[in-house]
Image (cartoon, each protein chain N blue to C red):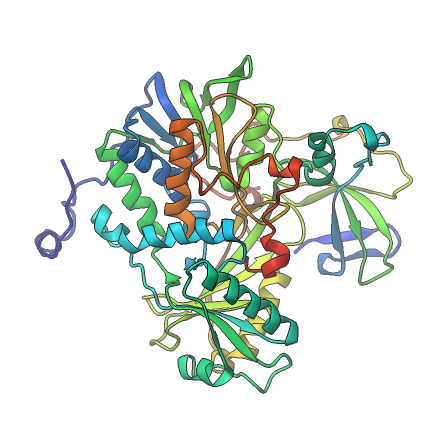
Length: 116
Length: 416
């Protein structure tokens, strides 16, 4: 369970919100010229990183307004929350500590999140 | 030496305090080169190695696992096995798996504790009834043993169920008698042991950091124990598959989310079948130890944290207590989460990709355990022949371009 700081209502429990998947996905403007593969990529393919993730949330059981967030999916730590009309923060603004794909210690498959 | 288990070996080893059992598999150092490197030592990955060695004569194989065998979703699921899927493609795939499950204990000489105690999917409203009856009809056309139960028949099978005095009354159920549960560790260990006997190297505590490609062809894998050359690389890494695919420049339509399960304190036998309810979201079965094994839902957002949100288990436990008031005062012993990789159509990807020699078996989402032997069997065929088996041919990556989705999400609600 995480707390999300709604830019309009303040900090609320995550269960009040709905996740809107990856943020900043732009609908292709030349869709009539796209191949099926390219169109399929727009429809079905979304980023799924372990680490820094730009995503959308909506405060569905509150103000019902949408906003963007930057979250570290390896720890669920929310690093930045910004309104839809604000500029997308640069990846370089955040220090992503994951050195390997799993981001876990060398031996074992311990839960990195809890150890942190 | 071939390891045989029997009542005699059990007795013999009990006299020496069970300290002299031979090791089930070796722990070799990785060789420089393998014909096939399988990334992920869960049931699907180890099974792939087993079937590659057994049915396709490829013996120079390594299975590389980040943690220990079965430490990912193989050891974290609620072990439900069934094949009552709506669409033909899914029914063929999952029933292929059940048929393998049925003879696996004997084939591996290792007890899978496969118990065909039946799986029941409850209907709570008019729409559920229509959807399930449609599914039953589709199943029967595919030769599956699903049937409709009315409330009276449900109460006979599960007398402790509160079917009428609740917010969403139980109006009937789809029931598959051949479904059931199995021991999750056993399938990983059984496959590992027999694959090891055929010369497969199982390398644990070794992380694959990067899949190296050259000229759109796979070259090997960078691991925490050095670089390993590989003719073919088969990725079976569940939640982390998209992370690994990215290192080879491949994009997959997967989203990784935590899925939770919990078990109660052990009690005497009280429920002798698997009961699933999509509408109120509660799955329950009883393990041989006597614990209630309860499956919760996925979190509503992408995460790799292997724990999951409390509100999700609260919702599930609420539904369980309403359906079975007798469980109201039970204590839950453990709760955990696993990271599942979900496809847009909630069907898996068992496919080659644009990179030569690179294969993916992923996207099993919330229901991959039941498919373990079937998935491994057809995936081994795909890897060995560079061509899909006719059963997994529809589960390709091209379906996200040509639109031939196998949409089990919409068709079968939560539990697909």
